[in-house]
Image 1 (tube, rainbow, N blue to C red):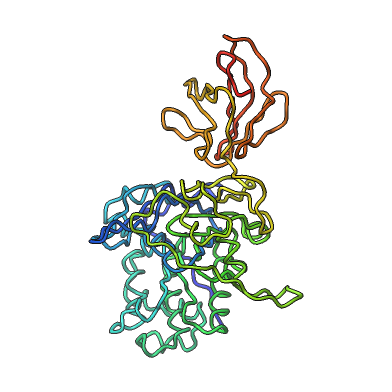
Image 2 (image 1 turned 180 degrees about the vertical axis):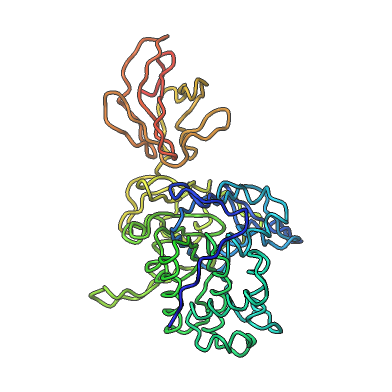
Amino acid sequence: MAMASPEIKRKKGAPDWDKNKPLLDVSNLKTQFFTQDGVVKAVDGVSFHLMPGETLGIVGESGCGKSITALSLMRLIPSPPGKIVDGAIVFQGEDILEMNDEQVRSIRGNRIAMIFQDPMTSLNPVLTVNRQISEAVMLHLGMSKTEAKQRSVELLKMVGIPNAEERVNQYPHQFSGGMRQRVMIAMALSCNPDLIIADEPTTALDVTIQAQILELLKKIQQDRGTAVIMITHDLGVVAGMTDRVNVMYAGHIVETGETGELFANPRHPYTLGLLASIPRLDETEHTRLKPIRGLPPDLIDLPNMCPFEPRCDYAEDICRQQNPALRVVTDEHRTACWFDIVDGKKAGGAVGSGTATGATNYEENVEGNPLSIHADGANGASSTNGTTVATGRVEVETTPAPTTRLRAAETTTATPAVADGTDVTIGKVTGLDGERREVVERDGKGAQ
């Protein structure tokens, strides 16, 4: 029977964290590999956050950037040829990208731990399991060899390995695949981390062992309140394990939302394709599975277009002209698609590609600074000084009319008539950040 581990006190550097603040906040992360053939943009502008005790799923095909995102969080990108070229990774209020090597090593395995894909290649074949688990607790927790071995035995019992006192002195090749993965989980838990990154933890395991490993991870997460990032290509694992999901494709997050909402209301063609390619137990009639045609794109010098366009059933010209940014579907649900895809059908024209007759420039006061914004096709609403106000969906709340969503070839007609030389507030724009911003008609020349 699994034993509970005694409470372990960490060394300095592990602050008590406010449960209401994000434990991890990733902003505009870009990781690239510089090769002879060109620059591979493996992770291109990824942003997300993780709350304490939350489980976040990252799902997508092989080569979409899932594992490189995880390695970037730990600053384990091999250099050369890889390099994190932009962004911020703020963990418990500290930017990991601004830390020196010693500071990063104090976090790895201590406050952030990782379970790698293949335990046979991740475990050292010439060192005993005790030696490999003890290394972390001796380094980060200052334990003696005797204390570290006792801790190793406790951890092996915790993850369900029988005869732990004997097996702790064995080598990785003496364990089965499922047992090796349990050893990897024990190593990850050794210093009571605040965040565990599980990179395809059930790869190459049979279904029964997969279920046992996932149940073990779920129990650990619930008992300890540890935050987990679950990286997988298996939507079934995502549905059963996670609170929120990021769907990745070609180095971008193309859809994100609460797990239940995203599965019930998928809005990106790639998410729809993933769901349509797996069997469902709740179907009353047998239907053919629908694979996603084609292959993921080459990430070397990818043009500024929707990367899923060559494989998409809903693509139009605008998809080949610019890569859409994430836009709001609901408060906790965003998608990077030019179109509203509802129940697998396209609803209306391109969202956020509205045109306006008459003058299309408006003055906006943001913290006292006037900015000119306009609805000009694919760019949505943007300012002349380069600061994006809203990309994708542009919602104009006119006075006194209700909210009007500008779509392709549509105009807003609710602007009040005013005399030249008069400034009047004609409505508000909702940006992607959810904030409402006033739109002021300048010189009586707003959209008619």
